[in-house]
Image 1: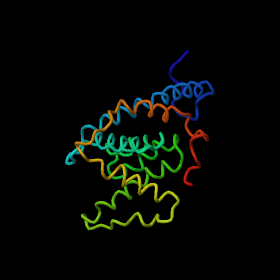
Image 2: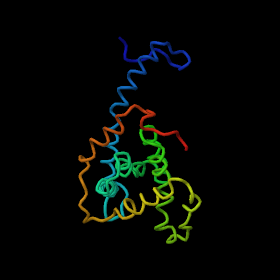
Image 3: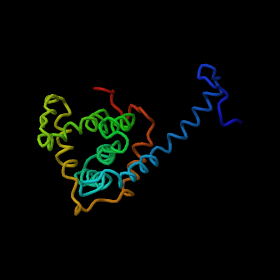
Length: 193
């Protein structure tokens, strides 16, 4: 049995080619939690200037969410909310939300997608920008949840003395969320709601 498709253009693929790709893509998708773990680990180096690494920040945010009694999806969201920093520093929130979206309810991916704007409330005025940009979402059903995400878990997670849980503590949660079938209606709400 071949492990490579026979086509050079997708339009020339056969049923067997696409069945092979379907099996290989399924196997690849099963390893997603491991790739996310590796991406998080890479956040331990990179952007300088903060009192903790981006990984340290992510672990603090997730630990705070966990200790606050947040559900698994929100804890994982707090852990991966900045995973896009490495490759998409100017739209990292959208990248993280896109990674989460097939596996979590719409509220959670919306919070992660908007957290960058909501987080700017704490610093935008220091750049002579509008710190109230999030107000355009005032009245949105998840406005308060996103504001709370930033206030209670994100903006205060730069403390080198905070006793965070290690990354390994979150592996079972990563496996639970990213091990789900993508777009499973039991977990995922309607996109863009």
